[in-house]
Every structure is written in C-alpha cells, then in structure tokens.
Image 1 (cartoon, rainbow, N blue to C red):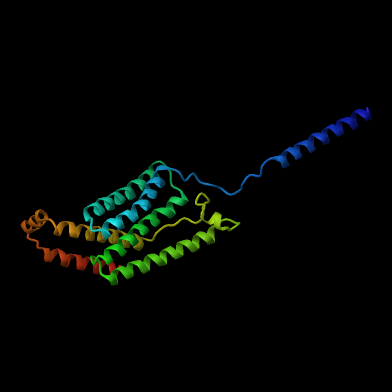
Image 2: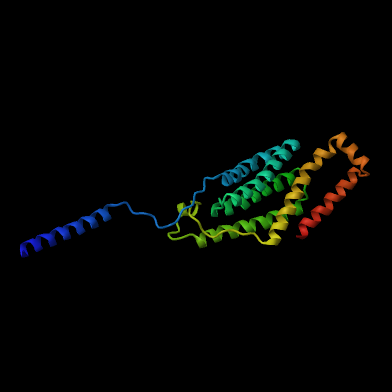
Length: 226
C-alpha cells in the first residue's frame, strides 16, 4: 500500500511538473490591451489625412474649384465618421487622436498655402498656426505621459495601444468650427469672384464684390478673436 501511495505521489508530482513545464512553454501573452483600429470611421479619417496635401497642392496651383471640392469631401467625412463611430460603437482611442489630427493637418496645410497665395493675411495665418502647434505639442506630451510601460519609440507610435483620450474643450470646438468656415469661405472667394454668373447673382441680391471682401475681413477678425 505504501508503495502504491508513493507511486501515486510521484505520478501526481510528475503531472504537476508537466503542467508547469507546459505552462512555462506557452508563449507569453501581452497584458497590455489593444484596440481594433481598422474600422470604417478610422479609415475615413485616414483618407482626410491623405487628402490634405492634395488640397494644398491644388491651392498653390490655383485650382480653387477642385480644392474646394476636396475640402467639402473632408468636411463630409468628418461628420460621417463620427456618426458611424457613435451609432455602431466603433469609438477608439486612436480615433480620438487622429480625428482632430486630421482636421489640424488639413487646416495647417490650407492656412499656409492660402497665405502664400495672398488669400489669407499672414498675421492671421501665424496666429492660427501658433495655436495648432501648441495643441500638437500638448497632444504628443500626453500621449507619452499616459502610455503604459515600457515607453519605447515603437510602442509610442503603435496606436493600437490605448492611452489618454483627447476631448477638445467647448471653446476649442467653436474655434475649430469658425476656422473651418473661414477656410471654406476663403477657398470659395476666388471661385465666386472669378465667375461672372456668380457675380450676377450677387448683384441681384444687392451685394457687390467689395461687400464680400469686407465680410471676409470681418470674418477673419472674428476668428482671430476666438
């Protein structure tokens, strides 16, 4: 009997050891949570990032109609991707980061190119760019500060690793909205004023080209004040 008990004990210990060996032989699993970032809202947002340089190129070459059309696409996708993310619960941390990033990237490129073409005052362009650079630096810092350890360069740019979410303030939303309207109006200005048909419609409404120019000036002051 004692021999049987000893054999059973050895077999049990062997089984436990085998389980430990098997457990130790398994591949280590990452304890850091990851997100599914390849979804429709994020793809639409990424398309805005890709479109931004093309809009700038069109502005520099005074292809304002095409630039305005591509800008309109960016505005529509900005609305659609957020709606899809909320409706189908596809919100991700990476989405909360790249969505405002896409907006700011587009705004930065258009601000620079419109200023170079003389359609936007250099002083206002400098103010807008200064704000955007400050926001970008703050976002980069908070990404690093909230990234789970270890904080490596590769992990920093791996946006499937969630960190702090970005939530713009109400004033920031208003300012971004006004900037988008201003950029859209600035893009539309040469399209409208270069077309006699559009000028005829304005004349029928009691408006002249000078009135439109004054409106743009007041609009620029409003954006600068916010």
